[in-house]
Length: 348
Image 1: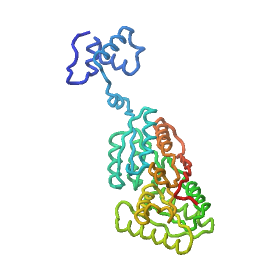
Image 2 (image 1 turned 90 degrees about the horizontal axis):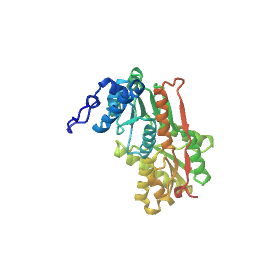
Image 3 (image 1 turned 120 degrees about the vertical axis):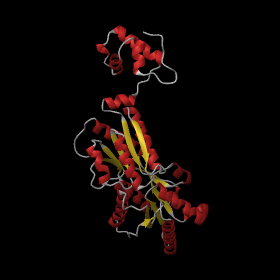
Image 4 (image 1 turned 90 degrees about the vertical axis):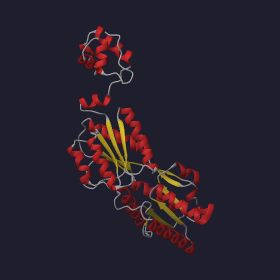
């Protein structure tokens, strides 16, 4: 053993520990990997003391790569400005902490090309698994994950042609619950408002379920209002003008209008627009119900379907962890129920 310590300008290395303990790097490596049964008691104590004196911290990434494991989980998120995504991420982070993973989060900002680039990047980082909540990723972009042996779990949205475990909201049940609530409270003219849905499976399912639920009740099925919040200001203005026309038409006919927002960003845009038009009493002009339950919904009294976002994120990590550990079998689909939170915006 030597009294010489490594320079304070750099962290201690395994070579420094070996030198301090008067042994070789192989013995220190065995100690760090838990193979202490092959070391004498005296040698174990010397290595332990050397680690403490030098404040040595193993390079977990390097050790993981050497064993073929790095404990990195990638997550591709379409939109971190959406409260839904942030809440799912909280569940992802909690599960990663519990299971010993480090999440690597990539925000695609609702850009399809950015999704493609991040998926390629995550593959090169050799993540052990991937959680995908994508806007428009296609099967050909995800295919390299299969070749690299990287298991993936899809959150909220399917990708056509790409089979993987899926977890999200039971959209059909959520639509049925919400629509029943509106009808029970006397709303006659119910209109579905959604962002462009051609590329997003969950939006397509919600729109189709809404139309089917109205038709099953023998009620008129009005055209869907498509509200583009990302790219087309003129189109968004036209969609909101359409909403105004429908509210005015309901008032002329003496029926009660309700707007069913497909998610929180749509609900917020509608609420802002109606307040600008009608003032603080806008909820007397039209009901508003939304899938998603962001914190601001309670402040302004919006009725919502609360998604089990934390559970969705946590379960997604559990699914991918099981696949990493070798779980085989058919693709698993877990559709979790939402919860109706009734507030003033749909009062009778």
